[in-house]
Image (cartoon, rainbow, N blue to C red; front, side, top):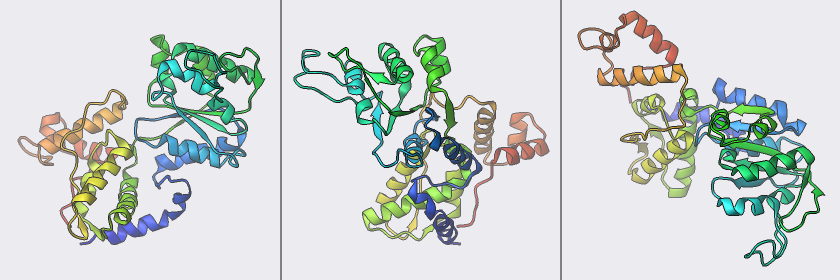
Amino acid sequence: MRSAGFNNCAYNRMSSSDVTGIVGVSDAIQEALQQVEYVAATGATVLLLGETGTGKELFANHLHNRSARHGRQIVRVNCAAIPATLIESELFGHERGAYTDAIGRQVGRFELADQSTLFLDEIGDLPLDVQVKLLRVLDQRQIERLGNPTPFPIDARLVAATHRDLGRLVERGRFREDLFYRINVFPIRIPPLRERVADIPLLVWHFITQFSERFNKPIDAVSAEDMSALQRYPWPGNIRELRNVIERAMILARSPRLSIALPASAPQSTSGSSKLVDIERTHIHSVLVNAEWRIRGVGGAAERLGLAPTTLETRMAKLGLVRPGRVA
């Protein structure tokens, strides 16, 4: 049985998502997109929350494009990628001579984002002293370049993103409480891929299409067993990890039927979900795999978990745990 026809058909129905770059029909992703529609036109500060690799930058772009500021280019800053000694200058700019290496005037990212959107990715990594100045800018709508104490007005909409638990950072004194409340006006949670199981076939064919064109390798089939395995895997690296898995499979492909191997092992993530339902799903899945998906009998998953087989089957259905398909 070829699964490509169904998956390609489903992906074609999602062609309108190419405008945003966000592929998905699951309730979880549609809810997040609906939140964008609510807030895009308001100009309010938005905080995008989600694990690494969930597509927060795509959501920031989509939000900007749905706003009244879409005529100007969005300005992006990755707070984790800029040294702490340079981040203030990057954000607010500096005058010539403001510090030793300031040989000329530099326009900051806030100034570049005037009348547009400033996307501060990984805002949880912003140094405390810069957090103070960011709070002042958001409150007063004015900035000062380093080396020039004269403030001037700025109109930049802030969209921030983080994979960190900002509330926990506040408790540890690593993120200012007043700034947290200032940017937490309209939080949008971007769901992890394990909560978007229905989107995995769409994403798989989305990436296959991309790499088929790049590598000049036409693919017309993915086995149902491989697709089922992809839907059961917890994806700690989320969409970025899935993309890498498909790219690796495409590099190795020698026929139109794509064979997709899951990562041998997943690194332990400190940013993973701590929700009870996610912990339960991961644990039950692990026990099922070790029991070779045998539920009943001595050594079966139900016995190992201390549950009645019918209770385990009910939990599996609720958690979306399905035994791998055996039909290609």
